Length: 67
Image (cartoon, rainbow, N blue to C red; front, side):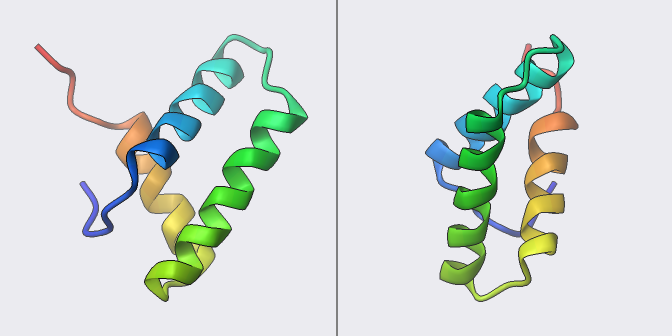
């Protein structure tokens, strides 16, 4: 997974955006909320924004199945 620790709220936002995207109903509001949260988190952890975004997407979209 990722060495970056993500707040639960950021994980939840990305999950919502991914679910909306897969259902063909991603809204601008959701997309903007995720992007803003990624930018804030990147600043907080002192990492490039793109690295944080890629790690977040990997964490959400390629997470091991629960079971």
